[in-house]
Image (cartoon, rainbow, N blue to C red):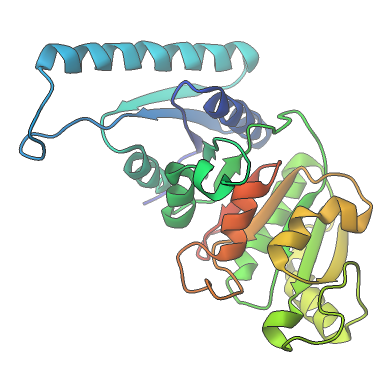
Length: 297
């Protein structure tokens, strides 16, 4: 399916989803795309429940949902007057709706419910499901996101071939934003060298092999995006931890977004959404963009 010139955002009327909608609107504005706002609600199906709501109640819920979506779209149009805003009210599981929409979207945007000790649960099943199954890049937007904030694009790099999709998207994102790119390869001693001395050190390391891998992964993209300033960092430790602590480790500014691939590098790498991506989605205070391995640039 050909992708249309739209960014799709899932909304439900919550403050968190409106932060995601505003971030998606700004992204669409930067990329000269339309914004498609999708509100999907699940309804009880005949023959799948012992009780089905009377039709007048279902009609009332649909009417309220339609008015809510119209109000949300009106708020976005007011804040972004030059943006083409489309709406879609659907009566299916929100996860299925957004994954289906992702076939034709340049990007899919969802919000999260917040952070805390149970962040992996609080982030919400919709965000995790869509990030794992969508056919487009998925931006998971924290409720603490500064929609107008600036900062470099931080991309997590590893030696896997499917890391190239994330790198390519990160270069494009940096070019669109007029920002720099920070390419970070986190070398996990515990995973690759056993429990070696110094495995938990924080900060840049002089590992020529890993720097060579990083340079090789970036080479073609630097030629394609010659105007994007690039900083290369190699760190030692757990990938998610170091990417989350990038500002502390590097002494640089807070990133505008974090870009990663869908697959992890650790014991959960076989899952659709890797452990690194899951932890970033759950704990980052900036948008995390998860890029599928077959994403086109």
